[in-house]
Length: 123
Image 1 (tube, rainbow, N blue to C red):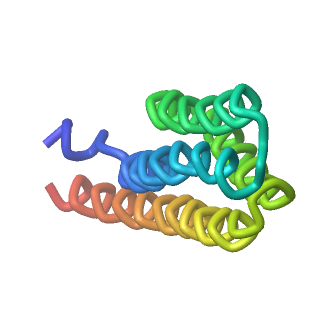
Image 2: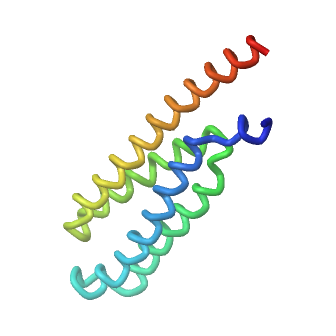
């Protein structure tokens, strides 16, 4: 039961969003090269750095400050729209997913804490 109480729905949902976003950002690398005529080295640096950042931050979500890094990744993904136009939309969608995962995760955690407190008071 203790393990059940310690599992964070917020962390799980946010990590899932970042994991999917890592794939999308990694796939922007060939788009930057082929469609936007970005130099190969620059495209690799931007795309792979953002992809790795998503994976690293997903693993760091046990720490509260990592959620701020998650928001920074969302800003970077949207800003990538200056290079690859579709990233305005795709980055916005991922930012919306991230925001909802963060918001709903916090809400679920509050409600679970209240439910466990009520359960403990009864037993």
